[in-house]
Image 1 (tube, rainbow, N blue to C red):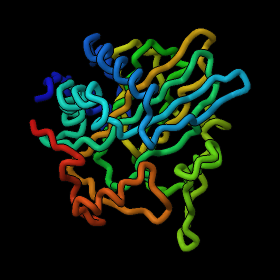
Image 2 (cartoon, rainbow, N blue to C red):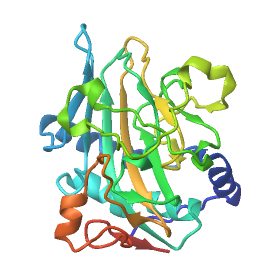
Image 3 (cartoon, rainbow, N blue to C red):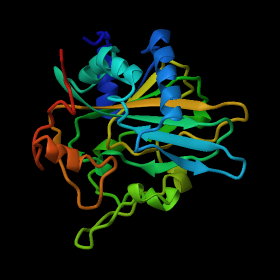
Image 4 (tube, helix red, strand yellow):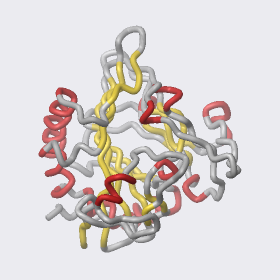
Length: 280
C-alpha cells in the first residue's frame, strides 16, 4: 500500500487553476536513495526505450529512459509504496488514480541542452484533462536549470502543432507526423517572447516535487552550471476522464501495441495490470 500524504487543500486549488504546483519536501531521503540506486542500474542497463537525447562537443549528455518500472525493483517499490499516488489523487480530486508510466532524465554536469516548450498529453496514447505528472529531482536544482511552466496554459482550447522531437534526436522513435486534413495552431513562441507569458519555475532541493497537468506548456531543465548534474525521476498519473486514444500523428510513448494486446481499444477507460489503480 502507498504512503498517504496529507496535502493542504490550497495545493489542489493551485494545481487546478495554474496547472502546476510546487510540493516542498514531499519525498524523504529514503526514497531519494532508493531511486538513485535504481537510476544507476538503469544507466548501466537501459531498456529498449533508452536513448541519449543530446551529446555536445564536450561529451555532455542527456540520458532518457521510460517505462522501466517493471524491470527495476527500486522504481516499482517507489511507485507502489511512496506517497506520490496519494498526492496525485488529491491533486486530481479523485479517489482512484492509475499509474501511467515513469521517465528518467539524467543530465551530466554543465549540460546546456534545454527541452523545447511543448505539451505532453498530445503525444500520449491517452486523452483527457485529468492527468498529473510529478517531476522529482534527486539533487538540488537552480531555478535557471529547472523545468518551466506557462501558468494556466493547460486550459487553453487550441490544438497546437507540437515539436517533432525526432528533428532534435534523429531517432525514429521520436518522430511525429502532422495530419494533412487537420488544422493546427502554430505553437506559441514562448522562448522568443518570455515577457508576454507568466512563466513559473523554482529553486528546488532533493525531495521537492513539481506536479503539473499533462496539457500545460512546459520546457527547459537545462542550462546547468559547471559541476552540477541533474537527475530526475518523473511519474505520470491518470484520473477520471482519461480514455485510450490512438493518435495518427504518432505517440511517445506509444502504448498502442501493448494496449491492444491487453484488450484495450480506442476510447476505453484506462486499466489492466499495465496501469495499476490506487484507491483512496
